[in-house]
Amino acid sequence: MKTEKLLEYIRSRIGCRTEVLKMEVSRTCHVLAPVLTDSPPPPVYSGYLQRLSARSVTGRRWCRRWFAVKLDGVLYWYRTNKDHEPLGALGLQNQTISRVPEAGAPHAFKVSKIGESPFYFSADDEDTATRWISALNQVAATASRADPYVDESLRNAQLPPTSIPNVDCQGPLSKLSQRWKAWRRRYFLLKDASLYFY
Image 1 (spheres, rainbow, N blue to C red):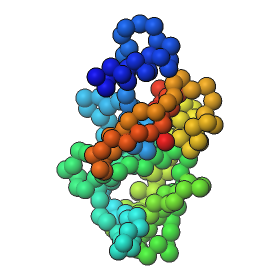
Image 2 (image 1 turned 180 degrees about the vertical axis):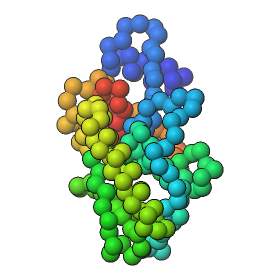
Image 3 (image 1 turned 90 degrees about the vertical axis):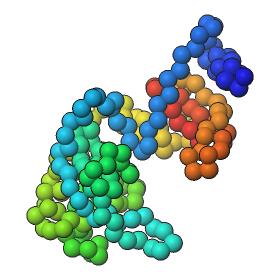
């Protein structure tokens, strides 16, 4: 019954006059990535690195993870090289990669973007650090020349809902919280196949 009421509400909001309404929902977690094929292309470069963890109760610490930088312009990290589901991902579009000897670990470098917190990494040796920096710079340069649609979507994600022009559909919906497994009412906005929520 709730689904029927939701569809009725959506039909009334977008002016749909037919009985059939087809919706497609897409989920992105900080990264807009293409649809994967049966056999994804191999990474540009991969291997173990240390990543400086985010602040927590115990402070920051270095975590050893398997990293793979791919042609989609994203650096993925996994618990081990056997895992298929990434623990996290970092889009390299408009990112700067540079050495940081003051990071507290030998062979350290950072990936940063103006206005955002940097990500710190450390390699096991100097040669590995140089190869990682080269691969990341190569992919970041390619990603920065990427699709203007991605640029607009990322810009819109930073704006309040009233500042996004020409939206396709907007209004309140319920979203299942990952952490607490409970439904939360949020304000959603659909524009150019991107779904934003606040």
